[in-house]
Image (cartoon, helix red, strand yellow):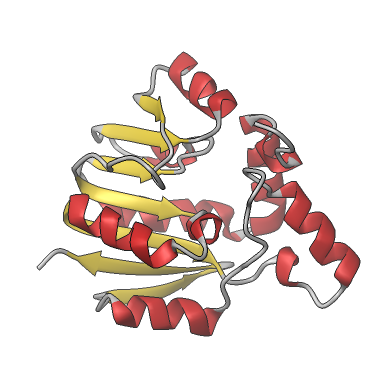
Length: 192
């Protein structure tokens, strides 16, 4: 994993950066996601530090991530997490699939990933994506640093979605509900 960004060096680093960025909305953000998941089995794509698990109530949980450090850390916590690149592999089925803070990493193939996830979601797909991003700052230095800190792979996209783009994505997939969660826009897409 060449040139991985600081945010992905270790789950502790990731969580610290996320807590600083989300501030007071951090807990509410995860509580809202947890309520939306309910008691459904959950598959989290790009699961990172698996923080959502701390807010669930005994759900069957599976995570997928491309970062071996995150996968090993999750496994040491006793979590069912696999090292997998969802860009090239199949997505296992689950009642609920969560794409959280990671849709931008799939750009420009983000629509393809949503289709793949929706095909594997038995009941619903939840996408929660930041629309307020330091990587989108008008200050070129802040933007450059933020993009480097959140680099996942060599060909990581510098793209970040804004509110209008996410609203359009959610409309394209007929989202049942769209909700603003502090920094993120969350869309709930139900299986028909």
